[in-house]
Image (tube, rainbow, N blue to C red; front, side, top):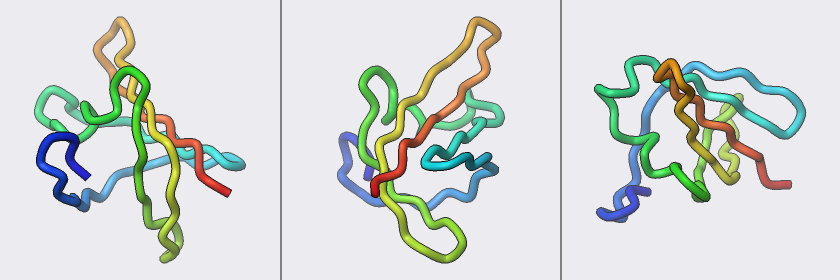
Length: 76
């Protein structure tokens, strides 16, 4: 859900999955807004993985080169 709007958004992304963690590399982050909802302490997120809805906690980080990565710790 959007932090201010409360609306739910659906965005296809490329990701890597290892154990209970999903890592999303945000391409062209300055042209996108969704990942900013997960700055600082991050927040809840819902993902569809292999056709199954999963929930977790996402945190976005921007490195010194300007690349943005969103790391999701999946629940359960």
